[in-house]
Length: 427
Image (cartoon, rainbow, N blue to C red):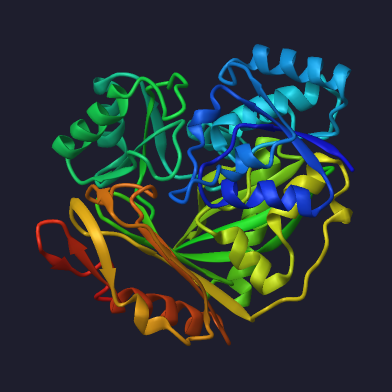
């Protein structure tokens, strides 16, 4: 039995699944958190798994790397720590510092810092000679405006240090760019209270389908688990409406994408850990959107497990313990799998979802989870979801079509009496 140190967690998806998985693997964990109340219990009164399954809870300022390292050293001296993990992007750097201080397996802290800052990824890939979108990091409006004029509209504006598509926006003209710049630089802290750089990455708009490469790197050797196809909606924002695994692309294009991503991971210095690299398939070839030093979100970890038998969250634990070969390979359950997200096309309070009953008896449906009542805003990032439906299929096209068709069955009941179709139902 190993003892892991968990530095915070996501609330949902991976945050719900990793705690019981650690126990199922025969291990235990200590939770390091600023506040256990960050993880509220369910409506039935049960505690959140992150809190419920912890062997011990230590309260510390997890936004302070020095405090995290000090707490990790104290715990290691008292009870021993065998690995450090998190499922939350905002604490990947803290995990790297803690693992490094305890001489445990993990990525180098400076590499994680680089990968979590989108403009530094652009710089690293360009220096390595990889085809990289035209870009500039702007800390003032005149710099942002000049960059867009040089690159040419339309451009994409995004914060260099947020995730889930937050505040990522297409700008077709100067007025739209100024609005995006104002929104990005107005936010001083992220949702976990960490100070933001307030830098705007202005870059060339990449046309073409989007995919993501799910991979594991150990001792500098990268193993690709597969490529995920992605549905993007919500223009001018870039909201992920669903995923399909494996992606519906030709084998030669898949090989090109994998080679490009391997080169990009090498360029940023990634030698240890999971990665989720988003790529646009442009007419000129694959182009990196961003690199994330973690497992894929949006239930991609479920898709990979269903199709390949490899569980990315088991790999997360195995990598933290320095033994990726210990991760089990489970029987694959389907040739393909897809997830579609239920989102309201307009703001309001959704009180009910009609049509879910039509899925009864459909053995292709692995899971359908929708939470109501829930107040929603106009979809602007990947946090705009009411729920999801996850399905399997005999091939990627069938699984993708089934997931999208399920969305078309649903109707959202609003508290003002309106009935609206979910975003993407027309597809």
